[in-house]
Image (cartoon, rainbow, N blue to C red; front, side, top):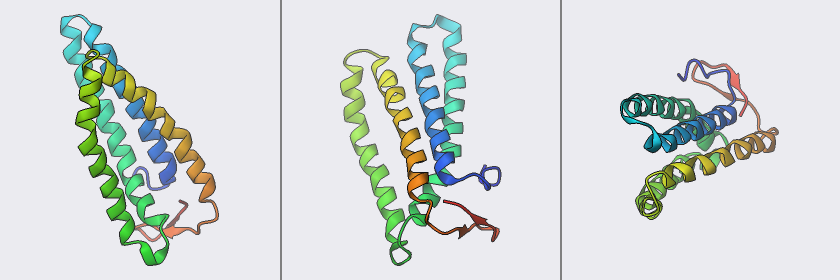
Length: 145
């Protein structure tokens, strides 16, 4: 996937991943009301879309955590990026439990409502980082952040 996305700006890849996440979460939200057999098929399809979203977004997120940092602080930024994920993983069970109390679809309604907010945020980040110079990719070709 990294090879396929090599010419794509990381901000756009992460925005696309957020949009795909919203689609997967909406799909999960629709499953509790579906009749028997389609639930299994729908679950597999939603999981595939979710995995595609993560596969599309992860390389860009990792790249942005380094590329947007001041060169003297590039070692700290991946650590802060990972810390943000750890905090989310610690808080998610409590938040999702609070949502599940109201019904099985509530977490899946909350997540697709929040995920699309990341799309304009990453596209704005692209405009804000326009002055940053190109950085070399693993193959040595410059890519825009």
